Amino acid sequence: MCYERRTPPNLYGFAVAIQNPTDNLPYTDLEVEMSRTFFSSTQVLAKEEATESALKLNQELPLAHCIHFSCHGKFNLHSPLESSLILAKDEQPEDGRLTLAEIFGLTLNQCRLVTLSACETGLTGLNDISDEYISLPSGFLYAGSPSVVSSLWKVQDFSTAFLMIKFYENLSKLPKLEEGTIAIALNQAQKWLRTLTSNEFEKLLDKYHSQIEQIFAQLPKSKSRIFKASLKQARKRQPYPFANPYYWAAFTAIGI
Image (tube, rainbow, N blue to C red; front, side, top):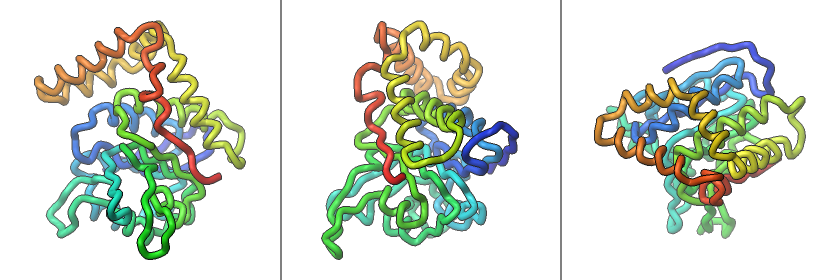
């Protein structure tokens, strides 16, 4: 567990982040490490520390202004209440999942934003009990967060990392939180990624060179080759590496 305090001006004072709990999404490490710089203080549950029990027993969670999940997500069409965010497993009896049914039981009255940077977190299913459509975002809205950012399909952690960093950068520049602020910041980030040129992308890679190299250094050689190949492929997609909607259009803002 990692705490960090900063003093930049921003909309959201304290954030809790879940970072790469299954340890197979290396670019989420870049995503969280850079996104946290836009908050005055953060608590990060990273990799094996991001267990289900650690999250549920976390006394800081109800105090967070923003909660960021950078992990895998799973949507269950046949049983929507079993849709879940995948966390690390520990020795406790929990199964390493935070299900929608469990999210409904959280108390997040101080939270202003939950970001679900994971696959298919915005899909909806029919609740057999009430005949209403429910989803992971609806659980967080019920728990107290007025805004949720989620995805509509399986996303790539590489492009998503840059999208999320820009999203939080945009939020930090807005003068105050108003209705539609989060949707505007997300839309601006999506337009930015869609129109990012190859030259601008190279400058971005230079900016985050040390962080990316550190990510590669922590990977086994076999996995390092795979992720370096994805980076090489992105460089070949000229002149706009992320113009395809697959890379930028998955995320949506729900709430105010």
